[in-house]
Image (cartoon, rainbow over all chains, first blue to last red; front, side):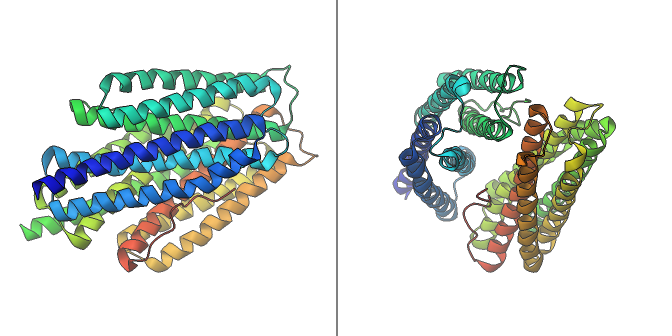
Length: 221
Length: 221
């Protein structure tokens, strides 16, 4: 029984790593869809979200079954409970990539992002992808050093998010209301994507070190 | 032991009802702050979020302790796991009310919401408060009928959200980019507030009826 139990625990971590990989792939393609008005990329994110939802539901069921059958205690119980929370965070990251893809699809064949904001949004996409990849490594290897790096990447994201607003609010900006709405929403989606990754990383740090994470990963924009 | 166990289970539900009441009060005051440029109301939401965070952390700890000490199985295990998820949803509702209050504070002494949008935002605030109150009753009384009502209220919220964008995008609208950004963000916060309440209600329905909720409460705007 004991061996089966550890296999089940490991399987949950494996699922978590896999769903995080899927979310990273989704945000990558969503950024491409948004910047290049790439409808194929947008559609692939939109249809691909189902796989993320299924893996999420499966991981929830696995964690629940493990709790019900094996009744883990102490640190193992903590790992399973944290995993339930983490998989919900990552599922949400998939939803946020999906929202970005939908903005791209709505504006096709135009790009929702005007030329003067393309480089900032490109950077946001790159940071989001980097944060997601690090999040995967943090989960797989319980890598506390990389978890700290991820926090710094999130500060970069917050800076890019502020830059987005500065550009929109600059007197010289001549874009319209529709573009301002699209950019505001996409900026928010990228920021929340990274907040959820930070939240996952903090839960791993807590599991490893026992040090409490801050209650909210969200920046006070 | 069995009596203590049911007391502990009930205590978690009581905490859930209480944190939902706090979130309802927060969204009510946040709406007032936003529409009336009421700085006192804004500050009370901002400082009051700490109480929501504390109750959230306490409820998480209580649920964890119950799992560790009593090792519930079957439907009781399901209730505790669902409660962990629900309390996270409600904590997030508090954060969203906080964000609205921060928008109000940022624009003080002006109102972030221009006259032509005040009635729509007022309605959004009222619907959010109603949904939150029903959410409380759903948790306290496992009231499946009210859970269904809450879903319909959420459709009303989605309609109001669309109306907000229609107004912003109307050719006759003369507001500026800053207002469009504020309105876009606040609209999103209200919508997400209600999505989380719907998510909580669906979890309660699942606990009562065993019927699976949809995977995502979020409208495809």
